[in-house]
Image 1 (spheres, rainbow, N blue to C red):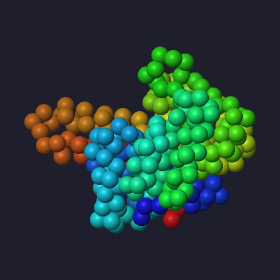
Image 2: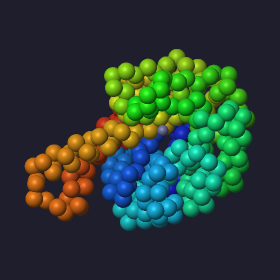
Image 3: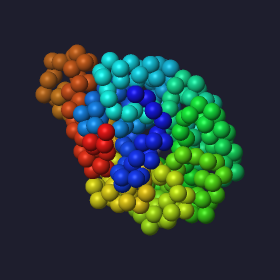
Length: 282
Ligand SMILES: [Zn+2]
């Protein structure tokens, strides 16, 4: 069943766990994630970036694929279909019109007032359609950027931003980065906790791949209710596929090649669901 994230966040906040968000990269990944989370009895957020929308061929294709798979595979857990890091109002509108149940508007690289204005416009449209909205303040770094990758949201500004936009969940920059940390992680948990007390809405942790179990648990303790994983899954899959191709040099069936990484992806999902406590929540 496709749902928005509001009730899932309420339950997770009350019971002290987090909802996992896994990026879908192709048709097979939708299935890996849905199956793994259904086995775990874990609610799940399927995150789709604008580049993945392009890869799949459009918003409606993604909605139809996900809905059909939920029905045909008899997936019993609640599923949120979430647009990840949309950088304009129109993308959010198109996702909502197509049937997405959650969107993230990320115009954090713009000035503060522009960020407030665009986010506010997305929230107004989303509310009319019962869709939840996540937004970000202070740009997240990336492990492939040459700039200083550690950026931190301002406490007062975070409060102002959340209060003025009415978003459902907030993604602060607290030293987290997309991709791998390369042994150089600088998450400010004190700031994370302070932001949570200040904004009093569910927090989202982007760039959680590579964070150890204790850090994930600490983040949840500090008020994080949604944790995004992508790199860990892609890495596990590609390692397995490389191994498979190396030892099966005569195989050319793409189904066998793609599926050779299935168990590795599902294993990571089971591990993450266990660590963040989303298992057996139904
Ligand atoms: Zn992200």
